[in-house]
Amino acid sequence: MFAIVGILVVFGAVVGGYLMEHGNLKVLLQPAELLIIGGAAAGTVLIANPPTILKGIMAGMKVVFGSSGFGKARYVETLKQIYAVLQKARKGGLTELENDVENPDKSELFAKWDHHVREFVCDTLRMAMSGGPTPFDLDQMMELDMEVHEHYAQLPVKALNTVADSLPGLGIVAAVLGVVITMGSLGGPPEEIGLHVAAALVGTFLGILLCYGVVGPLSANMRKLADEHNEYLHVLRVLLLAFLKGSAPMIAIELGRRAIPAYARPSFDEMEKTCKNKVEQVQAAAA
Image (cartoon, rainbow, N blue to C red; front, side, top):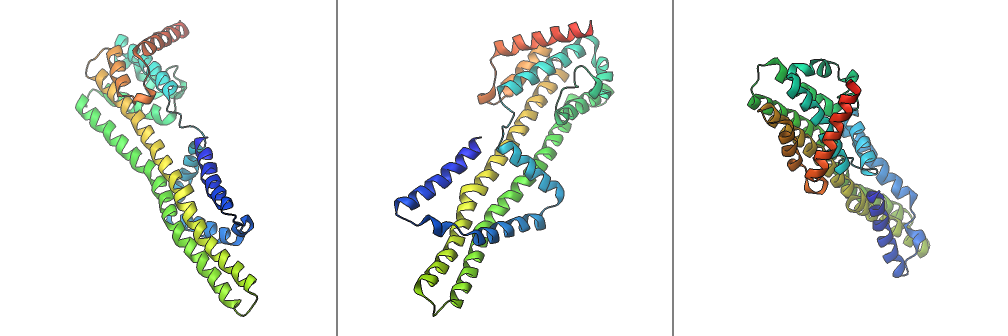
């Protein structure tokens, strides 16, 4: 939502300032220039990126124009779900989670989880149940998982940033084509030549505006959203490692809570109340 508001502010300020200087708005309406720049930019994306990156860009755009999903409510829900898992493991041992980890889709504990998060947690618990890796080894595994995830999450961002960097150059291409048309009009009425020159300059204007006013900021927004997901996995890593080292479930959850970014961190009372309610619901469902 804020991305849409920001784009409207950018175009509103630019067009508003242009009109304040008594500019002719019709001169800025150059569909041909926009087609050249936009079409060439879309072509460069297709040339430079495989389908997986293109899907990542589209998915990122949906999140940018929607909501990140990593607010306080998401973290509170996650702490509540993880606490129920840790409580079950504390009472019956890690082997008590074997059926839940092996069949997470059918598990009361994991069925409603996001599949990426579920895989991260279940894979870690599965290795812990095998009895081989030490907590240090499991921490290394989780860190490696996060690094791989971050690398691939940044690829769509880098692709979009490359498009942004190319837009001023594509604007110059559109301007050069406009100059070529202008050269062909020499000897004609001065008004006609002036319109062709204006159209050529609009090409440069659009390329720069789209780069620094739209596509570049969208790329920066996508990068921040990718970082938010990595921060989310870091919270899971902290609390899982604390539990595997022998901490009580509530201590592990508290360590995870303190790893949450300040803007989304719930208070201790919120966390404690929510976690206890979740355990009671699970116990009631099991009964």
